[in-house]
Amino acid sequence: MGFFIYAILISNWRPGVSSSKAICKRQSMNTETNPKTNYLAGFIIGVGYILFFCLALTLCSTFYYLSELQPQSSPINTFATSLPPTTPTPHIVPAEQKNADEIFKDDFSDDSHAWAGSDDVSRENVTLGKLLFESLNKDSYAFTGCGYCPQLQSPFYLQADFSTGKATDRGFGIYFNYEDNQSGDFFLFRINPEARKYYLFQGDKDGWSLLAAGESSEIKSFPNVNTLGLYANRDVLEMYVNGKIIDSYKQSGHVFHKGDFGFYIDGSDAQLVIDNLLITKAGEK
Image (cartoon, rainbow, N blue to C red; front, side):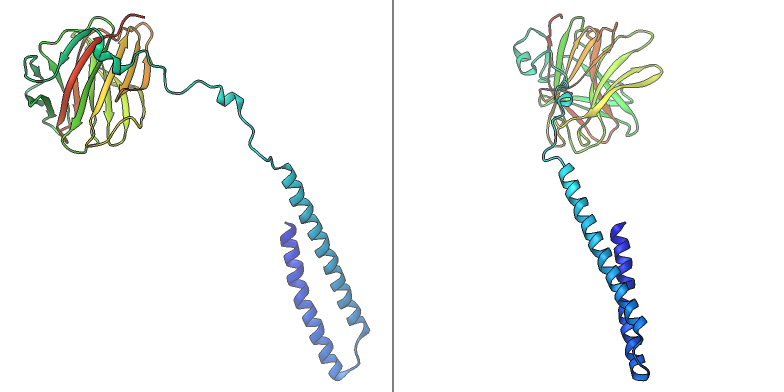
């Protein structure tokens, strides 16, 4: 505000002085110099100087005061530094599960476990040590299940390698905790590799419910392989990508480690390639 007042005073003062001098000059050609005019010009100049020095003093004082108030370094927020990490603490180490007690394993060297879905919705083919799985409808998701796989009954860690034939923003993942009953409840761990996002859904005959979601740098885009892992132990569920935990979920009173499992793909935009399925015993709490 002081700067603008000063600018106005200066802009008014300078033309005024020039105008006074011009007037005095014109008058000197015709009449004698008017003492009152010289006195008024001197008065205006004096007032201008006084205001200028007052304004300068005020600005200097203000900058000094603000510089003294400015902290030299930012204080440490001890509350923030004492908060727990946002990434949950894992109950297992995925790299060690290869040596754990095995529940089931499939390297897809053949189709002895009879992977299949619905003929009019999906297509499955076990070849060259891979399970190739795709939806037949671009606007419809598809599931594939195992005809000769055990139904899970105890706490487990499940993981498999996933890749796609081309870059896609359509999701894929693992469904689990499915029991063939009237409600048809199941859970789905799904990722979008291009967006690096993950989701946990609960599905039933009435539709889908989103339980957890987020982004993770652990998720790799095409053409990388993503190893998805699930740790299920009673009411606790942990989700892993490429050996690192990315999220956990707890639902009191629910048992996550029971039921059938399989794979999921969202639409026919790309073919899903699955390999190295491994399920191990994770141990009781």
